[in-house]
Image (cartoon, rainbow, N blue to C red; front, side, top):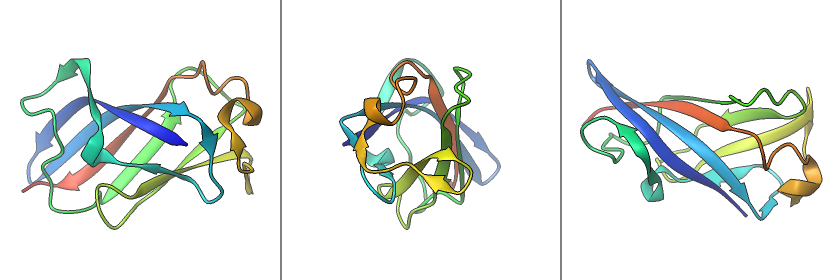
Length: 125
């Protein structure tokens, strides 16, 4: 089970940094959401920014995840963690209905071909 993040950009705006990312699901979706670990994120080959790592004071203060591939069968919901290593992303198949714990491909065949992206805002060091 994993939502493997790839950092696409990091922009510092005032005292905050914004981190853009793509997610690649593999394995199975666990009940309660899949962990999103920015501490072990890969760097996109087309990365935009100066430093391709999240240098922040703790957990994100906001985060959003969505389909950039037009997938309207799955709802991606960001859940803030207490560190930059334990945020979560929940999947829903309908409003108010979290996906069951099973292989990503079993939840929806569109997940594997979807472009899942997001942005997290952190307080900068």
